[in-house]
Length: 151
Image (tube, rainbow, N blue to C red; front, side, top):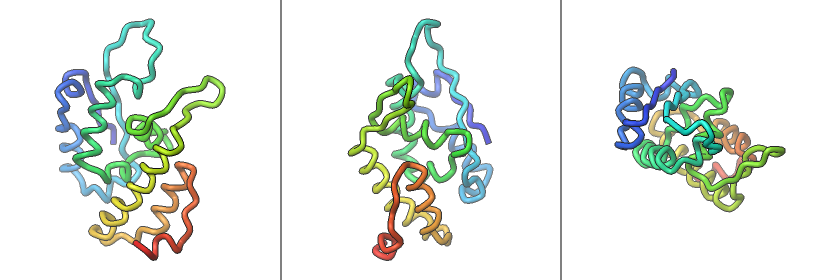
């Protein structure tokens, strides 16, 4: 499922495209299926990535505040997980190494999402340790099974 965003929606922090997508199907049925098409006008010589544009980042901060479990829905194969994280975690781009997240900020983000998603997945009656481990691994973290016993 592709969620399209335009400049007006981004500037007004309008989450209705996401709300419509979530209303059309159970969030659980959308696992790893959502991607964004962001139509935001830029000058032709603007070198910034979308995650470097403050207005777009603010929209994603608003999305994450309203739906802190939303990254569960993102299509990781299409790179949506990494773009979403880039919207929320300080980072730098390197032409040779790609995106480089601030390590401490990423660690805090990952741990926060583990707690949020663990609770949300339990509410959805979905066994979560394997899913959470896979998400953490996708972001470069190995979490021991014993961590999930604490949750």
